[in-house]
Image (cartoon, rainbow, N blue to C red; front, side, top):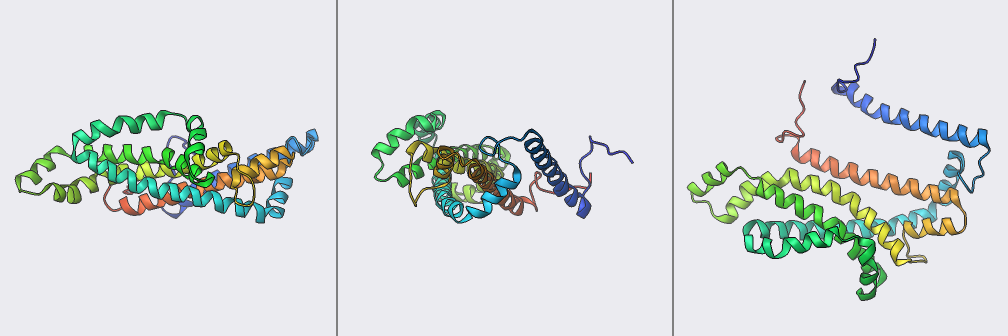
Length: 273
């Protein structure tokens, strides 16, 4: 029976299995093609290692990669936590006062559009330690999506409901807590999914700029070290680990979004059609 590519996958258990199996099958095809290409063309492993060599490096260098991953994750999640608190707090303040928004929002935009690689050397000069400089860089990148999305969500509250709350004499903070924050939740969660990946990227880019080395270094240093030593299988293994980490972060933030929105928001409610 031919498959209608224009229709979405079916619901239920069959649909979930299909959504999982299609990307896995695609990945297997790509890995098999990669292995065949390297074997047939006899590509040296220091140029393009085979999947088998990458898997071997992943196993043999796992203690080194795991320690570097832990350092990168600590910076990523610390920066994300600070960005969440600061972004939401500032968004609430700007939603409550137009003057605060006019005073601060343009500078948040300037900070966001300035490439982090350009300002990382300055941060490295003024920050007390290299790790704190990397943390600041990761926070700068993760901060704006939270601030921007939450601010947009607070502004998008239905004006008719705002008038209703005002008619019944609700205070500003009651309106914020019971109406504006729930309305802004989907926007905030969308910003969270973006900020999670950006925090990881910024942590790696900042470490590249810092040029850190030693036992307390993250995955960025292991990538550079593997490149300098022409240990390309380890480089690929570190890249795979970094990609998997980003996928896990996105999956976790997506799960949080689904759990919070599945019972009431249009974007998460399941439908039969």
